[in-house]
Image (tube, rainbow over all chains, first blue to last red; front, top):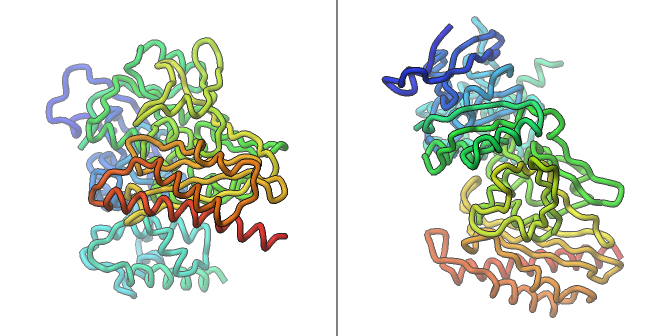
Length: 175
Length: 291
């Protein structure tokens, strides 16, 4: 059990109400007490110490905090942690297994899909949401699916190549 | 940044949600998709005392094309639900054209049609689309339901006419008078940015005669611009290059753009004129091809 309201403000007033929520994160049930105003991105990062989910802009623009919520991509800075009660989340920490990278991670490695890496977790989860629905996307479809995720380094070229690389590998593996 | 402190309830029925709104007398806000409300709370433009999260209410995530061609959209219908539905594309092409242009793909998995109309952002795609299409919002309060025509619902920037203890549970787009055609064009500097200018056009055609016409604009004024009066010049006529040009000029004159970093007022007015013409000429060309 982790208590999180103290993460939101250094000295919360007496009797600040919290709610107990149970969230499946990368397959594991986690039960935490949260103050309603805690954002999901902050629960993941500060409460559950899953710091792979990044917060880039604080204005719902950049997509660095993208995670999968019941399989669909969402901006975790634009959802309250209490809203995730009873739902299933996947973060970048859930992509790789103990010994192997996920094909999407391999793709970003092979095709140099990152420079500083700050946007990468969000990019990879947005890409996963696309590939889960469409295993053979066109370049246009990849660009469209990633258009909510900002990268300030790469110019996107290699990110798109990385996703197409991953799609090909995942199709080959599925055969 | 994080919001100021608030209470949170997640009722299981609309009646419970309405009771919560009623009990908090104007200090409560309904949370549906949260893609406008949560950023506003985080930036502290909004600081409600109570959040009534309706996401746990069963039966609000739907959109249905009825036999007569009208569409009913539930309060939890997400933008992406409307994006990939052939029945919607056939019944209301303007909605199908606007859906992929709302915000960005990740926001579209959460944000809702009805929430966006309620938010009444002068930049909002759905308030403009619905203004062009007509129809009404179904509001549920302590005394039951009432219908609010869209023209009486979005009355200004970020202003709707819901009472503090009412929830917009459904949006209804009326049945077409004939065959409904239309389009939505939006100029934006990048995905997810506010529009430089957006134009929604919907026509109901009987043969090659316009039986009904609606046009509305977003991003070119301090409110959603209702240009249905200008569009009505087409009713009872066949589309021609001449009447298209004259309606486009009239709609551009009805826009109220302001010069900002997205462009000058004149430029935005020119975009409106171009978009109205482009949409109507496109509809004329495709009807000629079909004939």
